[in-house]
Length: 342
Image (cartoon, rainbow, N blue to C red; front, side):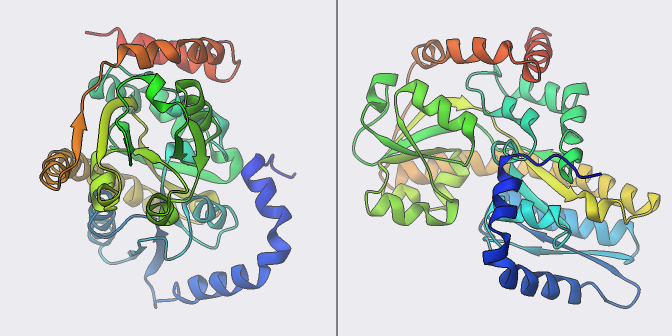
């Protein structure tokens, strides 16, 4: 029986003919690298630089897999979009040409609609609320919500709060976004949120963003402090406004084509290694966030801390609209209940 395919995968299949040679060569490369005697080798691709704290967590994950499997399993990590953008990596997982990836939950929503909840602005009251949800029943349900689309989440990584950074003027209120082209992820929900806040949302891949900012293709973007710093976007964007409109986690994802080939012991190794890497990643993330804010300020970036209330008020109707959605409404109710816990 064929599986339902959301928009991102349908578009991928329509373009498969044009890219079949490249995909075939990549699949052959990856497959050829998994025949290491008795060691099961799993390839993990992601889009971040090797200096990023999430990359260090993925290396920790690979080390944990090797240790917990006594060398019977190995994870090879390919950073910096070596194997493609986040969307392309998810597509490779779906067809079984790649085993694992780390992606933003916002990108996952094009493949598994339930992940739209994470891109809604001002949904979480803070980090404690977010992690109560991620480590609770809702978080566990969402990790497997992508299984009908050949993807399965293993763990969440901290990706902090996303805020606006701009080239020419600070964003101190929603009206300051008027007339500005703001880069967003390939997330329909994030695009809608930026438009509701008053900006002109422009999806651009992460790897192309520095040049787009430098050339004025976009006037700004939105992201967390470590990504703003390590991408060197602060060299172009001299205003960073900590409106903290979303708390979108990263997700460590395995393709079900790979997951279904693993036995119970191998699955436990991956799950336990993922959980161990989360502990390391959250510590590294906290340190990286503080370091990033210090460094960009020393480099001359003006850090602004605007009143968040006008931003939240501007998107309140968007949240109300999503509460009537039959898929997302129940999740939003349960997330709100988790926020009420002292």
